[in-house]
Image (cartoon, one colour):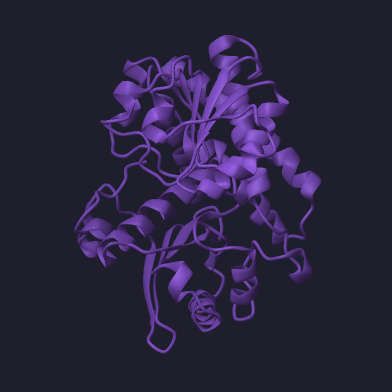
Length: 363
């Protein structure tokens, strides 16, 4: 699953002529009255309507926003395919600092743009957007998930996202150490916000030793006040170099695995909630060369999308949790295929996802 390169992006060149293309539709949205500037990217609808969240982020440039939308939507196609969902991949990004420019008028305008796609794209929460935001968007667009229970939704999807990552971590332990538990293992979690804090709870309940870091002091305090046994690392650079670390869980923004971080990783497993953890093609091979087991991000963090997809059919938490539990089996299947084919797990996951999408197109 190749990323679009960062920096300047020629959208038409990328869409029509490069390996990173293949997107069915990209919509550039602008509403001057509210200040909305957004990009909606639909990578594939082979398995059904494209499903993916809305990211609200202060991108350095419009080109960066387009690149992120293309990367994220492509990732959603693969994620939804391996999660067993009848949905293709889509993603939207809203350009701007959500702390300063987000408004009801802007969200309503965004909802109108999503609605104009007539159900080809179903939106939900992502970085910078929350349940309350989706309630506003839903006033203009019925193809909105991640809403509050009071408005017919399932609420916060981070609970099942963390649960799914934990299942992927258990599968990694089973594959590498022969036992599906993190008991006695040292696990470093980078980013303890919406998803990471729930992951920490699972790890502690399983008997793991947990080290955390986050750029927000309040997020760290929220955990250490409740669990003083949790250790805090100064920053991500210090976390990944922690002596005796067994598992590294990147749970913030993407690009965590790159030419600088991979050579100094002390962990033998990488399994986290962040999207697009591999900074560029080839990082997965660098991990394999160092005998670091990588649980593909879009496989293990699929619990949230399983939840929001279920919302479209009348949300049932137990049904969603049962589906998210299967992330354990899917992760093991990917590791087995990677070993059999002599390829990194990321490549094995891509092959399985592409196989399901190809089969859907041929029907």
